[in-house]
Image (cartoon, rainbow, N blue to C red; front, top):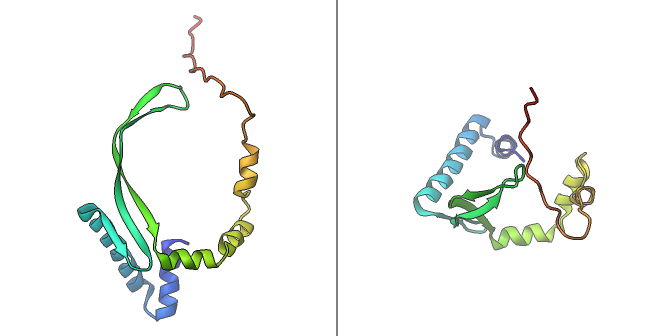
Length: 136
């Protein structure tokens, strides 16, 4: 569901104009972001908790070149659903997710995963690409 669809749904249920609802929705999102920046945590009862967490610096590999790169420390926003949301989502037994998957033309996660499954055994060594050679 997109923000536009949220606005349309609320406008239909409340009788307010879509412009008014869009302003309220946008101000709500901006308020959440501003509070996360200032305080690092937003708790919405019966919905969930947004929290800013630090992800430590680490070493990673560039998948194209195979070279090691330093990834600096950064902050990420996490979300933990509240009990009411968790209960309602689990009560549906995944019907909404299954219906969305059936409506989609894209392959399901299971079908997609089987297409890209690597053979068992040791991970193959990745050789860095060679620069083009000038034969003039």
